[in-house]
Length: 456
Image (tube, rainbow, N blue to C red):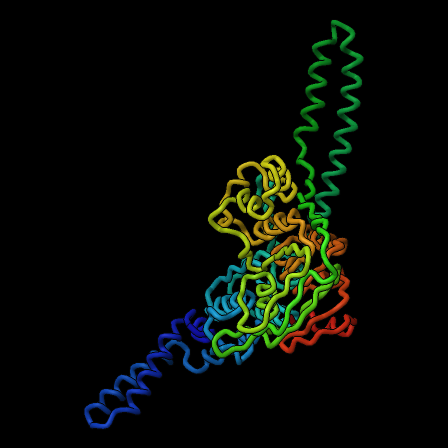
């Protein structure tokens, strides 16, 4: 199925278009009167169905939505199966937006979108007349588009509903935290005073019972307070101490890769020196993910070769998490990535990445995007890799975990090859060099390349 057909299928227009094209073909081949009449009737029915589903205006709308989320016109005729993971997600987002349902349910919709596409999506959602339920770590998108906030509080097993916008919610939440802090401080002072008085009264037999009741009242006064909001748990992420290697642990010579008629890599040459920090930039579909998959041995090039230098230990983080086995458990996936860890050590590692108790026995297929990211990073951290291939490592992460990843990237002494549209990740990486695709141009990093980051 082509990209166009996939998006049009949200309204059944893909079938209507195929039937219309088939009717046109039948008309062009009809030669006798009866055949022509039958073909014209079939064409009239197909055109009526096509128009009933929106017709050419709907086709134009689908193209506009696709362009808005960053799908270029030359991509629309390609088979969905030949696209990169990020492009496939854009296709599905475009399909959902084009469907025109009464309520949109969007889970991290800005992942894999460049800055222009994020801006377009904000405008689209602002003008959308239906309902919107969104889960997102993009606070800018939330602030611009929501008028109610549902806050799931695991500490109190409660769902709080705030009939306000995002900024007002944050102000109310902070004010509530300050109020709770004042109430707890007052209660603690009163309870301490009551306990002190109870301690003095216990020495007298006549007042011992009253003293016990007073102490109970003090404890109850504190226990009945609304619990203070606990800080969210954050995965503590530190990248591996790299194993020793030669001067150039990884390289590539003349890498070429095509999908059908679409050439993605065009004779790419690359030298990844020990400790180098290289960022790969390019428009969507330029071959960034394909390059990392080829360097990691997940794709076979049509021409050229990947060169493994002395002492290479490769670590690969895939944006679609295809390094994880969906049928194996969290603990088994970590064991696959870091077989040297004992069971106790593995459980300790998983605990640091917020997997505890029964969570470690879940199959990877049921994990959320953020959980898969944390699990993949847990395996990477304990791999001993000296060359890291990182494909969008900050996607699906909450702000605190993203900060941990960026801090780990900034302090890692080994070589890093990174694909990212996150300007914060570039700042943390402090790249030495840049590779621009699809041309494969390699250059020393300069601030002039920052403008390309948001276009990834």
